[in-house]
Image (tube, rainbow over all chains, first blue to last red; front, top):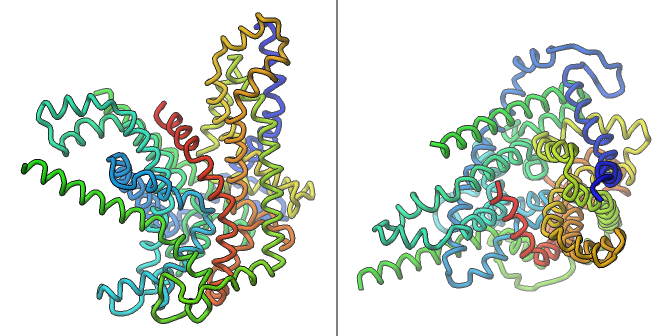
Length: 291
Length: 280
């Protein structure tokens, strides 16, 4: 039975491998290469080495989009993981209605990103007919309705809030699973040793969740950094580029202005930045757990 | 006594926090539902209210009167179903082979699954766009089905792999000893046991195609061919703000399939994600 295994496996795996290689591996390698050319859609392509990257260093839009991207990614990832941890604790605490809450909490997850954006457009309407403005004015916290998505100062915080909202369900469910995997005896032993709620959290919960948190932060970081649909429908990168994430910038370069080579170069830099940060983060976490 | 009081207080605070979380997470959907049922004057009223005073289904009527919405639903559905079926046909045998026979291919496939998570879709779409255009497959459903298939393959393979791992190999060996042929083992033992996993993975692939926006935005240009998210995304900005009611109604309709799938899959989804997350 095992003798033909290599051939047998190839037979079963080949139908899967061919499309993946043709339409995923090769395009990806080609995409990386395009980042070192001056390719524009419909024109001849010429290898130009590091020209794109030299230009990028002087490109004001590049710096501003990566700055926005950094704030967005750190803000959403941190918010999702910290609030997700709090929510997971609550869902795990045997409170009234926790079963229903576990289902309701998943709502944002089930929505397509485009609809998440449109929905928040309605919630954040710029005049008093929007519920957020209405409530804040009722509470006396603001005197004028705020144009959340097109104001220079509010647009980025607003989309970060929506981003946290969208990623919270997945983060909290993964963390809840992690919490449930912690043996109850550990808490019993800790409380016998006189540990209060906070030191139980600090010395039992957090260390036990460490691997889950590490993988969650890495995945969330990558996904948030590469986000597109949500912000596209919320602000389209506006006002004045204040919410133009790297993906939106690269999309516009390629499919609005036709600068495919430069856009691919932006993609290369995005991969480089993200993988460098994720690798550094994971290595640090691994080292800490060894000590 | 003091301890019990403190405990009670802590419970109450936690209860309030949980309620706040639920309101935060569910409110936008509730608000959209309310908008879709309000007559226009109520939508644009200076003082908004959560519960419609004179609920109406007019917006749904208007929404369904739009040819583009109907074709968007049809296109999204068709593309989602075909691409998830193709994904399953490719991924199920591959997952089985990867688990049961351990060779060099395994490591490279697994490495690819991880690497593919890292790359932004812009890097893959530019060359893909050129290739598909040369094959005259941009602005066609075949092209987008191809892209969605390849896009969800890594994750579906990952899911299917864990389902196959859940079937003890001894079960198959026992069937062999009892005189089953390879085909019989696969069809009578392996397939029935895998069925829940196949359904879950298929639904997952369907939902990711149904929700996908970026590739459809780039690849599908004509309004007749476009998918639901691309159709809806046209209503951002001032155009949508003047027609909030029908927009809310259309968005609700577009959300129903994913909501149904999610409630249906909730348990399996949670435990599936658990195993993926905790194992690392």
